[in-house]
Length: 467
Ligand code: 5AD
Ligand code: SF4
Image 1 (spheres, rainbow, N blue to C red):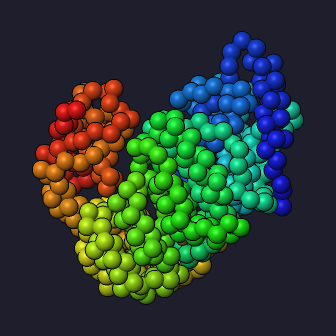
Image 2 (cartoon, rainbow, N blue to C red):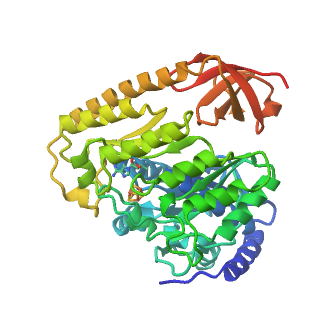
């Protein structure tokens, strides 16, 4: 196993900067970084940008203008991988025009050896490949690439604790992603994540609190705590702490801000967690609790360690303790040999819970996972039909939930201009529902009260309250 030393990496960043000033004497070289997939990846992308900035790069908004392109990839479904291959393939023409351009691939996809082999063979113009563990070593890898003029590939595993000390360049000033752990030990049978992100590593609470405090002092209004499985937070740390205790500590930080987190695994989401959400005023009354399926048989074959009943028991406890709580979930449709009756249990569950939002996926076979070896007699067209059916049912549920909000006043964090056109703003309620209303762009990044006047299936409309 490799060890990565931050001080050494910072020194490499300075060396790269020197090399770049010789290569680009008249201008600042530009970088384009794109992260696919989950928020964890987006958060890693912020670290990549921080390290590239330390290496002397500025940033641009398209690969065509860039001197270095980094695609931070996702391996969770085949579709995500196909998109990366498509986008990387398109760079061949860009590189013909800008011969000195560096193309780098990192993230979950390249942590799989057969993918790295495929890139080596079929994409000779890719210069830099580094796995999820090697991300903090970007400055030294880049240095090696520039000096040797040869392709650099490193997907080795890294020893030690959660890697600290990387400066981030964040996409937003008013909301911040804060990783609290990395990796996953659960091995759900469909999922590639434990193989590509490695074992769970929690981050020391002191470091997390330091980052949260700095964000809030810098004006952040929302903190999103990130981990593949936040409920296991603290298990491998020397300090005696769990996720609920961490939430309580962050909640004590002074200021007007919200706390969200993802993702929770139902097998370890406890009543203690619900009580913590109830008690902590800054923790949003919202829970993303991916159930994946409503069928006990499928859940068992997915290795999820909970049942329809136990999941619902927690949901009902949360509804009792926090009446305005909102739920969202991930659902996989078409797991190997999912029968119609299994799928119907999923429909029954989503009606019973009454989610505000569902993230729905058709099962995607991931080589090397146990589910990839399971027999499957369900056709692709049947899977697609079920997905459409599920979406139709969920659209009704969301619309019904949203109708109940008309007439209420919600506190909204305004995050962008609205989709409805000029003069509109968009934000999120505490329950994470999109709210659109008329207002001045200057308000982006602040909290405002909005009176809800109209409900759509997946968004609300309203009027900004004075003051
Ligand atoms: N196929 C389809 N969806 C998947 N997910 C994870 N692995 C797969 C797969 N092989 C979904 C799960 C998870 C979300 C992040 O992605 O629903 O919660
Ligand atoms: Fe994948 Fe399951 Fe771990 Fe989530 S908990 S990352 S679905 S293995």
